[in-house]
Amino acid sequence: MKRIALVAALLLVGVAAANADVSHYTNLLKQPRGDDALNADGAYCDQRLGPVRNGTATSAAYKRCMRSRGWRYDYTRVEKTWIDPDTGDRCHDILGGFGSVCGNF
Image (tube, rainbow, N blue to C red; front, side):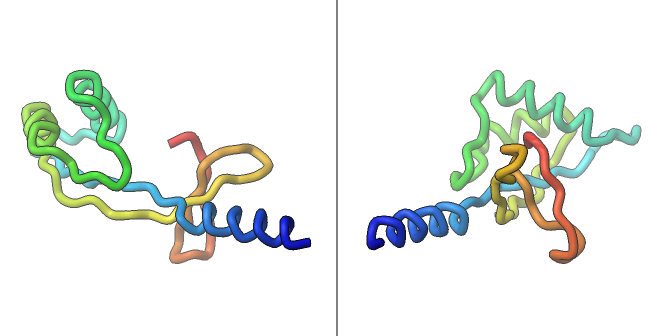
């Protein structure tokens, strides 16, 4: 019985501690660009400098790379996430907690 309680406690701590850093950038170019362009430019900087890891600050070199691609770094927000046991996708709350969205992001 103690073993089951310990495993349950460890699982709850692991789920509660799951977070994802979400960085926000502003488009500096005159033409409108969407998330596809932002993701492509982020992938370019990831290849050159390595991806920004959760829980670490965005480096000045990474910010310069994104700026050279026409994006200004604004801020990073920590977002609570969890793993959907049915699909294995990472999920997070939307609509102030009245809904959720899941995916491989």
